[in-house]
Length: 265
Image 1 (cartoon, rainbow, N blue to C red):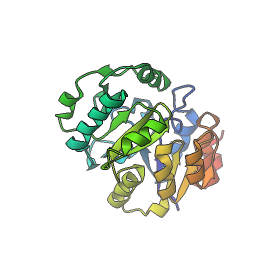
Image 2: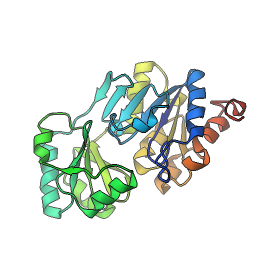
Image 3: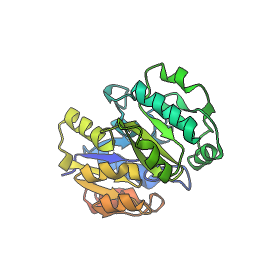
């Protein structure tokens, strides 16, 4: 029996084509929630960056790839900030190898420099171009749980060798999310499982990117979206249709989380 469903956002709930959540996904998730299934968002985004999910009846958020877990009403479940030493080392590597670094905070994404890659990613996810600021000033507030490195996978591998306390996870070739090592969407799932008393075997997870791989492997049923990256496809137990082709509804029906008749007119 599935007692909880965890859902990635970009490419899973929100279409890259329309930048919206399909009506079929909202309706199917409403039906699942009405049947007592708990719903959780599991995303690299900050918890304040989920305006497009207002109609989805989620109970909590595994935000920033597990670095910040919160109830929908704002109650904290877990938080894992970036260490100061690692942050300073990242800034030094940014200067040495000329790649932008960003901080993803609850009041927005901020970078140490704006480049064409930073602008391209903003266009891809329909966000404003991040503001270039003094990142140290923002880090001093003490609420940084995730950095973003705007670089290709080859340079990422070189950079991360110098940051042993951190780990990178990528869903897009333009950049990688960086969090405290040992923190990911799977660890966030476990935080909520402990809070609500369900087993990981009783969970279902949906994703499409490299940062979803730990979650897909940890879930009782891991579902990759159609068009997912190869790593996500290999980690999943089942592959559904794309977000634009009712992939979430189809998977929930297939595994009996909802009945087909409940969402079809």
